[in-house]
Length: 502
Ligand code: NAI
Ligand code: MG
Image: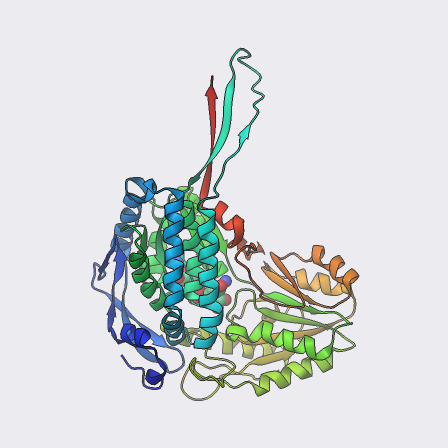
């Protein structure tokens, strides 16, 4: 392990965890190596150094994990726990995560590249809040009783009601941009509903899930309730998605892999929810203050280095103020300092991997070739680490690839528009529909625009705000189903109708 530049910033807990050179899989309450003995490396994106060796699960390991989850669901003590006991365990886990939030944030920073301060204030804070929110649902799962109208058997009477029941064993496959937060978006409702879980973290960022696995045991969850199989997509993700022993799969990641998971799920009639890519528009109306719009738009794209599924990656500004707003964003971008997650003076970190670095830079070149004006940034920051300069591409045409395809990095496209009708049409001219933001204080225009936008979330004078109780998910190719809120819980429950002739 090599943590040359950041060792002295680490808390004792994070340093002790990162000291370990090898990490196993969590199956049935035991930490074990992969059956094949295979491992893979995880790197610090700020330094490109290997920080740990991680067990690479294959089909055999996934099968054992699914069986452990199956056993814990079908016969284990877990399914016999009263809702209030599930609630108490989830709350205990949230307390432990809060206590370990600093270490978790530091480990997330080392593995993903994001700022440790932001990981603490955003990722970990939201994760803990969300677990507590979901813990509350464990004791509030309810069916309905109804007056029946059964037309035959007139002399009989019926008692009719519905029960909500845990869907069963859940496969959760998560990405690397908010590694632990998104994992808990799946685990929270699954555990509240009474399900058991096999979690497959992203191969770029497995570490916080493994630390979390230890807290799950410490909180007192029975073995097999939460299993963690690290590995890549084809090796560990695909066998999980195709496994007949799972009842539901919850996925966050690319639309391409989401479709593969959807196909695999339909084959077995596994329930599935998919939270996928986006190309979210930021719409600045003509009454908006130039500086407020520029600051808001810059944050909408550059937060988490643009690696946010709902990042505001397409900016549309009214033509009368386009040059001023884009000029201001250019200045903000040029002024941003890039640095590792422990550099408190840095405003942005590296992208997650060499692959993402290449991908994002190639999109910048595609934009240039399509005639975009590069207002700021324009490629890699020379030196060590996967750093991309915050980039603004201006006056690109609506059908350009950089406007239509998800880049998933700190790259903004900016275009002027003339009328509300035009901007609404452009905002919706995308295969995606995850989020959108509108910047204006003109109530009437804002309220007319909100229903026109085909997106799972619309923000006004803010972007990417999330709350445990507010459903989050996409229209169109941005996915199926919702994370967060009551809607998330529903995705982990079946409905059983009961008729009793009396
Ligand atoms: P990905 O969709 O391949 O990875 C997400 C998760 O799916 C990871 O855990 C991965 O191991 C797993 N996976 C990959 N192939 C699989 C398969 N065949 N079966 C089952 N699981 C599989 O995303 P990737 O390659 O890391 O990033 C590529 C692009 O995807 C990004 O540039 C971005 O556009 C998009 N993306 C979107 C995310 C979002 O939050 N909506 C998150 C991550 C990536
Ligand atoms: Mg990593």
